[in-house]
Length: 90
Image 1 (cartoon, rainbow, N blue to C red):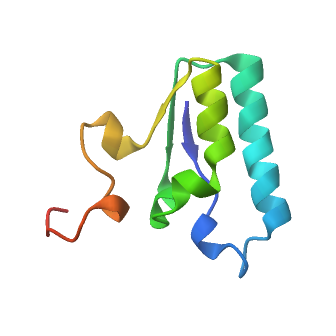
Image 2: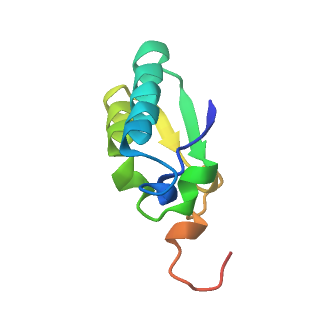
């Protein structure tokens, strides 16, 4: 399953806490009810270096259900650009 995560970098401006919670709850429900083998969670989500903290419930649910979840970069053996230390390797 390949999903565009919520635009957490817009939290408080164009994304309300209610809508973020709704997106998180929807994905945790998908994980619990369909137990996909792998989720690539990416795009808007990866514009925020705090994406894992802001969507922690999703990652915890995937772990509890033994569902692999990762970003597209991680799937390809790379560190997401938003987490790189400014070493110029984009």
